[in-house]
Image (cartoon, rainbow, N blue to C red; front, side, top):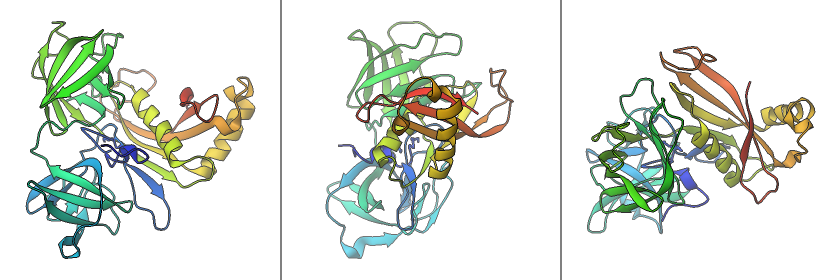
Length: 336
């Protein structure tokens, strides 16, 4: 069962959340604070949260494990590598961990638990198949990047952006049986994928539309979120808003890197939005406005005249609003 309030807390990073970074996964978010550990959420362009133990790479499942490992088995994480790569040394991870710990367990099959935000999260061998995380899966090796992707959502629905040349994005439901992923349109199976770790491979296109070749590999992506603790919004409200940005980010040839919430910046941007922006005419309550900032990079082929190739953009704003506190966020405006 996936964590709720930490949601893609996991996929520890996403990231995405990831991503991935949270699914295939992690997705987690970084919550700034003197004693708080980072989390992740699935989104574009980092590797799945992993750790090396006994020479084997283990990947996060996002599942919280009850209890505490035997003290004799607990070890300290040795080092951290950037989230766009995999760890290589014993006890090394590729996600922010701080002064964290891990332990190897064995209940018939070996696995690892890592202490994240005071909870032990299960990691399994990366060679295991059939484990599927919600999140965005991008087609590997495409030019420009991130123009073909599949968004698998937690409610078992999906959106498929097949090619930059078509504006139609098939949507429907998905289900998993053993190591196979089935995408269905109008209750009829349309695509079949093989599942392996953080990747899904197109096995059969029953629509035979030829936009995606059989054998094409989609990789789970993750993005790094950062947020400050605040009395203005709950962690869940912030995560839901950031995840919406991840889901809606679709600049051809651009890769989302970070999404952040800083209360001081938010208050200044909110004042400007309410006085000079759409907030001055749409009647929204300021308490139902969330503004987050993102950074992203572009490749040599952006296919957008408003973006420069091979550039990094920071401080790009996303204005999210809702009618009431118990309703989901929606994007009202974006840009600089």
